[in-house]
Amino acid sequence: MTHSPHAITGRFAPSPTGALHTGSLAAAVGSWLSARSAGGRWLLRIDDLDAPRQVAGMSDDILRTLECFGLLWDGDITWQSRHRDAYAQAFERLNRQGLIYPCGCSRKEIAQAASAPHPEDDAIPYPESCRDGMRPGGAIRSWRVRVADEETCFDDLRRGYVCQNLAMGCGDFVLRRGDGEFAYQLAVVVDDALTGVTQVVRGDDLLSSTPRQIYLQRLLGLPQPAYCHLPLVTGPGGSKLSKRDNLVSHHLGNWNGREGELLLEVLRFLGQAPQHGLTGASCGEILQWGVSHFDATRIPIMGGALHIS
Ligand code: GLU
Image (cartoon, rainbow, N blue to C red; front, side):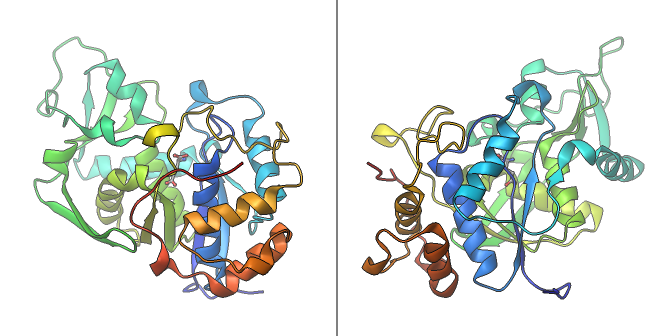
């Protein structure tokens, strides 16, 4: 099947820092269905830049788990660790525009930079201490991009019109760590453009990153994909799922034979109404139903627990 350059291209981009849990599975299913129901492609990217946080064997476990659920991807897998030249070029381009500066501020902020951030990381905007130059003799701990004191807005398919003033929300943010590694925000923007992604469907925990990514897309002259941030699966009492909660791992084999059951629960979590006749059906049959019936407007605004026995 050939695809015109304008066809829908979605993607799933797990970080190999732990096994998939029901929350990441919901993101995978949501993005898969959104792309496939529009006749589009679905790409897989492994966000493996943050070496210290990776767990050996996890990439393989994630791939096998996706296959187990019938979530097959198109073409070659993209590995971020093989794209550093492309990130370096984008970084240089911003540097030539005078938008990058070295920063000697706290290690903690820098450690967070190469990882997919979470809303609490954005609570305190960077105080711009190094914007006009570092303390003499200080070590470079990161490179930051200057942000403008203006609203960056976008239309999210589920959340509606979302705006953030980056200067007030996060301030000048890190694009490269002191050890030379590129930050998630830059890598994701470069890769989505390089691989022709036209729609980004992912968890709500990344909503707060989107204005930064759109800002970088504009600076780099890259196309802006459509965005849809999915509700989050929560743990007991509404808590955030931890790396150990609700694991869906090929390695653990904990769903052996019951993948279809879980897939139906994920569809219900995403507001879809799979017909009763699908009870006991294979993942392939359930996904096929999803391809013909998926309706993004039914995705609920609230997240919650995903009931699995
Ligand atoms: N790799 C990121 C994560 O696992 C997601 C990247 C994205 O979807 O933009 O949180």
